[in-house]
Length: 90
Image (cartoon, rainbow, N blue to C red; front, side, top):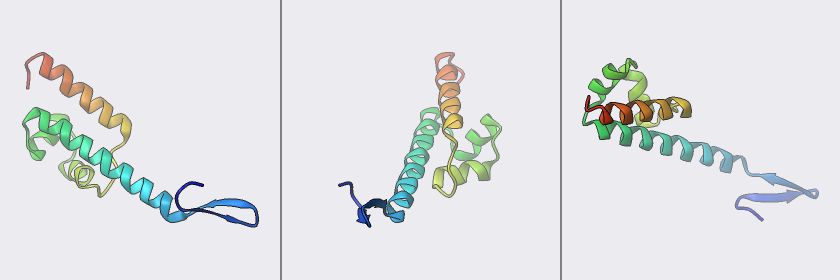
């Protein structure tokens, strides 16, 4: 049986706390990944936000885990950083 699951009347029920913990873990992982991508540029938050055209507060919330960066945005930002580094632009 998986962690935090139990059986009620023959039905496996997942603990709601596990789902919340999984979501919080995912948010932290995405936040860390975003910070790692930014760190590859050597830019601080303000510079990086301006370079990307993303509001500073939005990016700050992503990095602090207050809100979740959409995965597609993280992939696009990582791709942009990779391309610009290859071109020698950052």
